[in-house]
Length: 489
Image 1 (tube, one colour):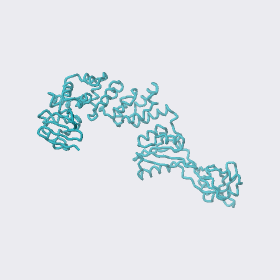
Image 2 (cartoon, one colour):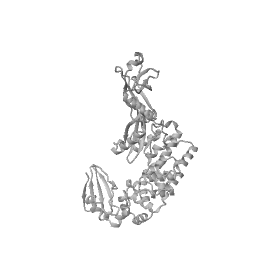
Image 3 (cartoon, one colour):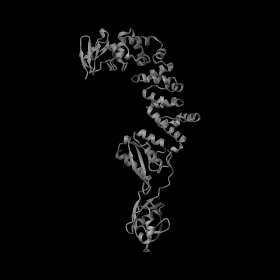
Image 4 (cartoon, helix red, strand yellow):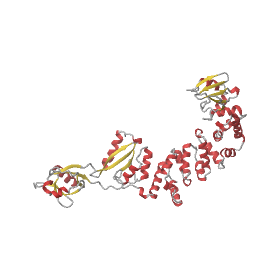
């Protein structure tokens, strides 16, 4: 824990490994750091923390000793320093030691802002310089040509007028050496320069995103969408895959034209996914088991499933789930309701009827009961009803021992309407694919099957398992899925 001590002309901050000495405004406003130990040498030091709020008032969280030190600084000077976020001590020192720096800072504030000053301090590594060398740097920014100064500080001839304009568009909290070198790189590229100069602001996350966009795709329209929807480097890296980056020039032109009318990032993602699917046709999944609705939308390709994983912050886009979808062992849908969800269906064995496996929200959160109920209501309308499990009596009477031993789980049976053995009413007789008769459905299930078949419904019947319990054989009756048209994405 840091302890402060106020002396006549200075404040001493006692740290575990060193002490920091800050001197009053009247005696030069210097700051030194002295390491503990024998033969320690004091060196110039720049305090990191801000001193005043946006109105030039001392921050209440400052130790009383520091407040007593800073309160002796003229109010006008403190108000000017308030504009230099994270660089306030440097601004105060410059105004104390460089003549007319206060007027220069005031002029910058009234004009394009203080970003150029912050950029010079960051690129010149002002916090690491001696106080005399810092004063020289401050005088240079007041008098020298700005492009020439930045070229000298960076060693790059890529600095140009666009660089200065982009620096003025940045948020002051983003001004650091890495960000500034990224700005220089963008301003050196004609397409990126055109795209970024049209933006009202430039931020670190937007810069990260634009740097990851291939030059031929650095479009003003795309940059505006990225700025409006807060799209950074991670989203760009995930959606602009190698197959997009490395496509031929003719395809690049077609992609650019297709994105020219996009208004939102969702539209950009959807169109790029379609291009990925065109360039990699093997990435599409089999036809969805149900068409879905406007709220329940089928995920039709590897890229769409990966996008769902990125958006929902869960692992549905990894290779395990991709393989399941490719093999028909799962199918995934996105739920676009008030609460977003990812829905997984799976083919229930032995019936092969698709059923709800799971539905989860962002970060695998459990869904609200009303969301789950809405999803189940949609599925209930599009999925066939669950199978009816029943039995066949008399199998031992109709089948030979060899036929019974050859019965296999999930074998689909033929069935026919026949008079019951008592001859009083129709019933359902079941046959093996080879034509051997097995027996009859129970009365209730037979009546249901006859009635609903007359209504135009179609059914299939399969052996539920290969257990033989005396003369009884277990079977499942399943309604066939309606042949609905495939709903467009």
